[in-house]
Image 1: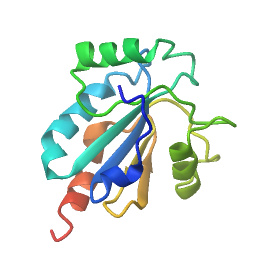
Image 2: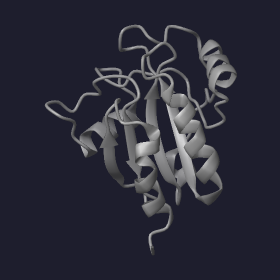
Image 3: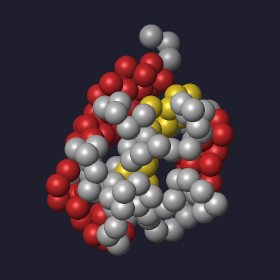
Image 4: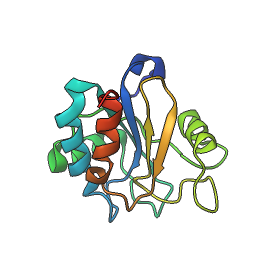
Length: 151
């Protein structure tokens, strides 16, 4: 669990998938699909950044340590997971404020639920926003295009 501040410039040149996560959500099994993508493409330039959030139905009430343990034990998560944050409201984390302003949602720019995903290209430009119901495996083709731009 990353508890220290990390600069997005640390990921320059990488394809980034940013996800707000929750441990007790109907979409929680998406951790498995996210981990599959990460293992398959991390050596080719993909990084997945998980941000636990408890703003939707109180579905991630645990401590950072409890959340990390849950993700590792139940889904074998090895991609970077950060400290719990807010994604909406006055205390929204800056990365989510930026992503929401860059890629509008349907009806509102706010994040509507857990497991909203944002795809960022290697230059740092946010490209696509995916709703909670979009499974990680459905994003694979978009990731491949960014990892192999000449194909």
